[in-house]
Length: 191
Image (cartoon, rainbow, N blue to C red; front, side, top):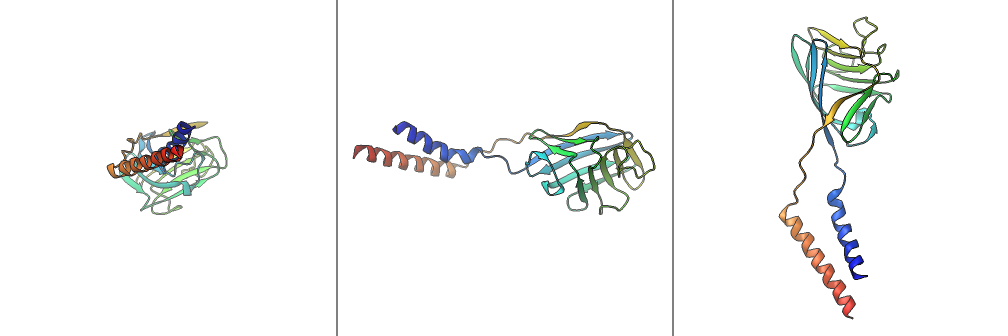
C-alpha cells in the first residue's frame, strides 16, 4: 500500500515535466518551377486542421528566380481559409484537392499583389497570372513561379528540439518534496 502511495505521488510530481510542448517549429523547403521557398513556421502545437491563429510565427525566404525576400511574421500577413492546412507532431500538410481552402503568406499585406507564397486548389486564388493550372505559387516583385499540385502534400517537417534539461534548483526542490512526503508516510505508518 505504501509503495503505491509513493508511486502515485511521484507520478503527480513528475507528470508536468512530460507535458506537451507549447509550440512546434517546422522546416519549410519547397521548390516551384524556377522559384523556391525555405524557412520555418512555428505553430501552437495543435494537431489537426489549423487556422491563422494557430500560426505563431514564420520566417520564409522566397525566391522567385530573380530575387529573394524574407516573409516574416513582423513584415507580412498570413491567411488560412478552409480545412486544407493540417498539422501533426511531425509535419505540416496541405490538401490541394480541397476547393474551399487557401494558405497565403504575403507582404506587406494580404491582397498587395506581390511577395507571396500561396497554396490553393488548381482553380483557386493563387491563379493571379490567368492560368488554370496553378495550385502552389511564389511571387516576388520581379517574377512569378508556380506548380500544379494535387492531393495532400507534406510541405514542412518538424524540427527535433533537444530535450529540456531541468535546472539543479528544480531537482533540489523535487527531491526535498519527495523526502518530506516519504517522511510523512513513514510517520503515519509508525503511528
